[in-house]
Length: 66
Image (cartoon, rainbow, N blue to C red; front, side):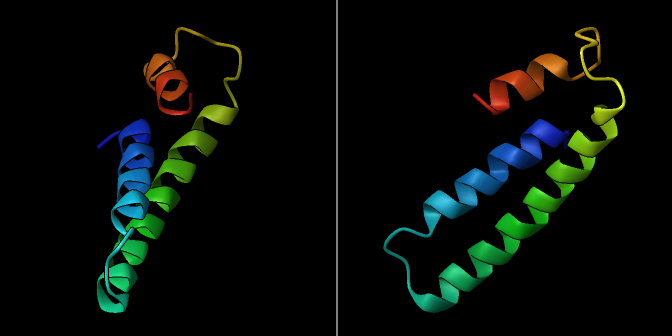
């Protein structure tokens, strides 16, 4: 799974919490945190090459964060 995919999955987990019980929300929140952490790690790895639009997943990051 790519960084942008992890980011999108974190957002899906958070959206899925709406109307769910406490136990389900705790599980979804935990999953969202893991995906968000992995997305952050991937984005941090790209920090050193900012401005390089030829980066392998640059377009994916731009789409995921819009």
